Structure formats: C-alpha cells, structure tokens
Image 1 (cartoon, rainbow, N blue to C red):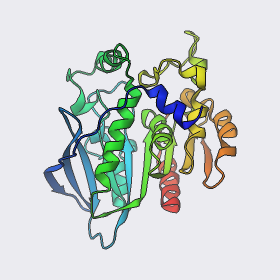
Image 2: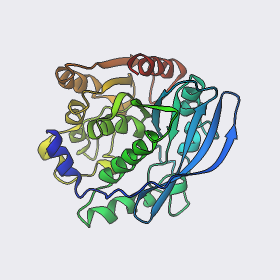
Image 3: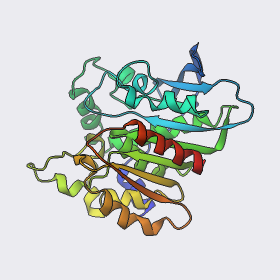
Image 4: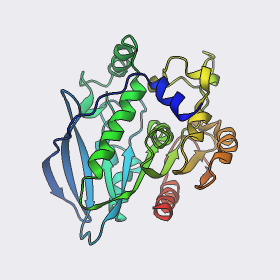
Length: 295
C-alpha cells in the first residue's frame, strides 16, 4: 500500500470549512489552564475539545494531540485524558500539560459529547459506521479528517510551535497514533500504546480480537494490513509501546520488523512492558521522554 492507495481506500474526503473557533470557558489549575474550545469540523457540525495550556509560556512550545481509549466507554473520552474523571492512568493530557506541553484532547465521533444517543451503547458507534458505509464513505476517513481539523486549529494558536506537533494514544488512541501520522504529515512524533494487531488474524470468529469499527474499510486487505499503515508513518518518529500479555498488541514485533526499513530519516522504536492492556506510569514516562526528545 502506498499513500495514494491509502487515501483512495478512505473514500470521499470530508470537506473542511472555516474553523470559526470559540473559547467557551476557561479554568485555571495548579500548573495549566484548561480551555473548552468549540470549532467546526465540517458543514453543520461543531465540536468541543479541551486545550490544556501550561502556565507562564514564554516562547512557542510543542503541542500534543491526545486520543482516548475505547473499552466501549462511550460516555467518557476527552474528560478522562484531562484528568477530570475516569482512570488516572489515562490522564495523559493532564500530565503532558504539567510537563510543559500544550495538550489537546478531543472526542472521537460517537464518544462523550459526540455520542448522539447519550448512552453507553455500542450502537451509537455502529450508526456512525453503517450510515457512512452505505453512502460509500468510511468512519476512518471521518476520524482522520476530524483530527486534521484539530491540527489546523492548533497551528492557529500563538502559544504553539506549528513545526512541533506530536500525538499520543492508548488502545483506540494507539491505533490512531499510527493511522493519523500516516495520513497527516504535520505530525513529527507519535506514541502508540497497546495496539499492534494485524486485521487478517481477526477474520476467524474464534480469535480473541475483533476488527475495530473504524477499520471496517472496504477492500482494505486487498492492499495490505496494519503493518502497511506503520510503513506510511515516516517522516514522523514513532514509538510502539507494547504490553507483553496484551491481546491487542500481539503482532507488534511483526509490524515493527516490517516497517523498520521505511524509517530512513526518522526513528521507529519499540518498547516491551510486562503485563496486560494498560498504560502504567513507567510506560507513560517513557512515552513522554520520547516526545520530548523528538520535539
């Protein structure tokens, strides 16, 4: 798979419109200010995301787009990453802001404020998938377009160095930490935690993994598998953070060995950790060090 084939597989491109951003509210914490931002992602759709700004910014600083987990938790997304509720191990936007990065925490479509049914039910995501597939579109294209719009917004902010934008995500976010820098070349460094699974191994109904809804893309396996997405990440630097007993990461070494040759002017790093599907403190600190080094 090459970049043109990747873009073609995604289907019709979502048309961007003027952002028309607005700061809805602002709240100061000990080490950062939390802004609730509203902006357009496409015609007739405005979304709210969280921007975490460290105090006392003197010069332009790097920004990190943070992507939430899945875990079928449709009622919580950006708020968990900002440390407002949920699992403290997944409050990486908060921790990054405390370390001096600008952190951006959006909801993927179907999650938290973008959950049309306001209930914790997988049907809301299935609707976003199925309603696009029957129109010749894909959920993956929508997700990537929304993240690209988020990047558009970040580079308008005077506090941010537009040449130093990174990405981090766990689980669902780990998938997007590979897919988004493959799609949008403005991302300079990315950390994927706990997702490295080839889709062909989930075609067996008795396998212990399923095909994620956003990866239901017609004819995808005709052109390649998840290792092909990793191949498209350069020139972005990429770290694969892998829990040894995580079923969603069981193909990490295969993906790493295949994609490594394509990282000629950037780094592909892999780090294995004990345990199952998680993002523990040591794992997060290693991720933050990688982002600091590459940005």
